[in-house]
Image (cartoon, rainbow, N blue to C red):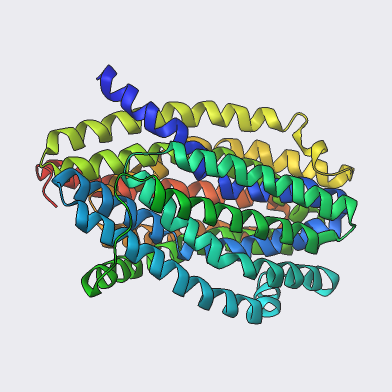
Length: 431
């Protein structure tokens, strides 16, 4: 068991950097833009929430590729694994260009639907239009990330993530504070960092990976798109809830919205870090299936859930502790700082639930039951909606109401996924 724990940690810790890359982009944006004033912070909150759904829709480029490469590599089908990676890169390029064009055109309407009005609407729409240029690079990075993780190589994603975030912070600081380009400069810095990351992944895939991308054929593309459809429906359902939470916060007023942006960015970096445990859960379960070793898959599930819950409790304490001083790093507005403190204290209780939900995501991805994931995500919305609606109607519930709704969503999601994993184990590890 100790050997398995060491393997989990060796894969999860480096994977942390690659998983946290996008949340860290957003955290840097928040820290820099927060000093431009409440209006800019509100615009960023709306824009980042809209961009999140564009990112989530294409996450199958990582998740489906990781499972396919890990399973095929374990079974000795290196040619099939290479074609699966090639299909991911090809799909990323095509879908990324189309999504970029749609986002650029729909930016004002999307921001309006999320509650932005007046100057906040103009700022959010401008940020979205600039950010649209980075979508193809982000999707290509997802394909490269799936390639590396499928080969149980999280160190390359870690190097890419660290380097890209250094580029992001340096460019944003220069553009916003040096060139005085404001909110649009922040978006441009992130686009440049995304382009850097995509180029780094492509270089690693074609020059240093043990299984290089191959020329995809029709079956690989159809399989990826089929899995992508199943995962994207699940991901859209997953994205509806955070978007709805932002929309509710926007209706509470500009101060709660700005405070929620700060609290959510800090929570998201920590919570997404918990997703690092989903990587060994997915990779080791996929590899066990490829090697026809159901016992190894069951042991992986048990240990990742135990470790995940323990780390989630620790991160809950850290989240609460951040309320003591972290908001002042993002804004000089006392009212926004108070709102962020309330949000962080309320958010702390959800971290253990997030840990369980994310680890179970990895386990179900490992057995490639994408229909079960879709059903769980859609079903969990029913736990979120009543409290979210009550908070939108009764503003006195405030940000604690928003986080209570999110906590119920995470709990329902974890419960539904755990039921599917338990059924898999009881069936003897058959898919």
